[in-house]
Length: 77
Image (tube, rainbow, N blue to C red):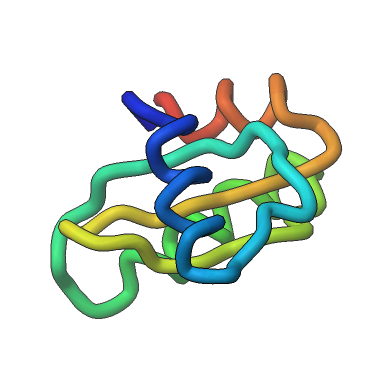
């Protein structure tokens, strides 16, 4: 995120608060059926447990795991 402080400010004036921050892996993906299944299968086969997954704008998937280095390694292939 290029301007996290601006985002926090915008949330604060909207009466929303950031309660927790963490590093995640964001992956640009094709807009096609099965892409999420393919990526999560790859992560599972590497033995990494995901604890966060969501879809972001512009065909991006967001992943979180305790083993962030391993997750990055698997998803950046």
